[in-house]
Length: 254
Image 1 (spheres, rainbow, N blue to C red):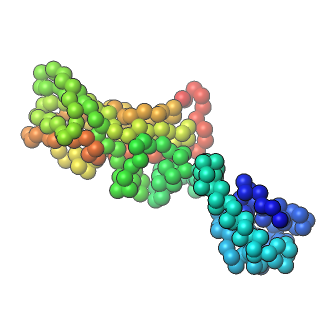
Image 2: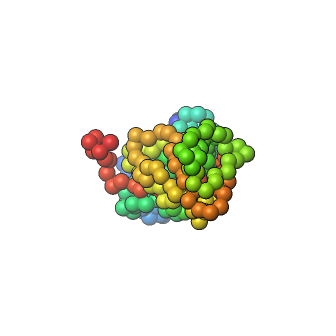
């Protein structure tokens, strides 16, 4: 039997159940699993296992070899560009559903990482793993900056290998990473990175970002302490948290 490689195993399973004129509850009872578990397999939440393919033989008249072919073909499809995009689309749908069901406000645990992997939240270039925390990320110092001396005179400088900010001097720079937000996420500046915190730097800039945004973030820093502070390209700069909106913002709010 030919296998449609575009359809997921769960979708094919659902069609086989319908061909037998069974409800999901009836099919689950004949297979020997719960309806909730069956529904999770159909929707891709739970894996399609070898044990399940055996259990489907009598109630659906399919063989384990058939399902092995379905799984192999679908795995191959997921390696293509179209398959990767389909995977991201399904991941985004699953992420949004989970956030809505949990009535989430702040993204925590693995939600930020999931949003990045699904392409729902965009950060370029990709952040190193240690810059993604349970409830925040850390964006980095960009390539160029404008430094102002104590008299307010500006000088364009590069941040590689680093610039030294003396007492009373200030600098404006942008983050190395470009941040792209979907309509239901807001980004909040939670503060300066651990590397810069406690060095008597005063932050100026926008504290809340929202859709539409696809840009680098602008940052102003003033050295108000007694010591010189070095700021270098690629160093952690800002701590950013994310808020999930319970509904799409109105056009007036955008």
